[in-house]
Figure 1 (cartoon, one colour):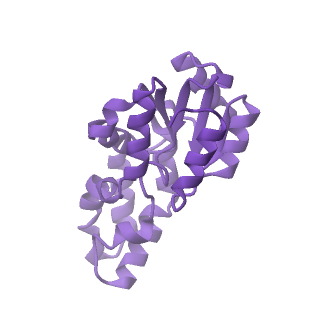
Figure 2 (spheres, rainbow, N blue to C red):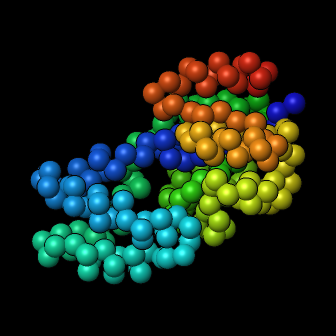
Length: 203
């Protein structure tokens, strides 16, 4: 019997789309592309995910890499980009319904500390029983050790837990570690509901 539902953030709870995000900081297509490549597609971005770099270090690097006209945008971007992601209201409603039906709700996400703090500050944040964040744990999906860390930290039985993530690879490793899951398509919420019902999860 499933007792715990675990959610990813990017393209599950929050829409992760760098092309949309950069439009908040420039109306110029060329500038948008530069910002996307230098910041969101960078090695430093990955290091923020895995916890090996902090925001001040990343800001310093990005300022050095960007053309003069864009340097002034770095701090604003880094302090606000995660607030520009659209919140998936269907997933929020699902989380609330699952919570009402006595399921435990957790997050397992490859993301930065400020994103975690932002989600915690949202109304939906109070519905989570726990968060496991790559930048804090200094380990990332799809490495098996982060799944075992999730089970250990929250005393979860893998067979009683179900993981919702947008990555096939992350779900494949989750299953290898004993926790069933579902590859979520942000454009097809109904398929997720159908899958949960198939597994006798009350929604």
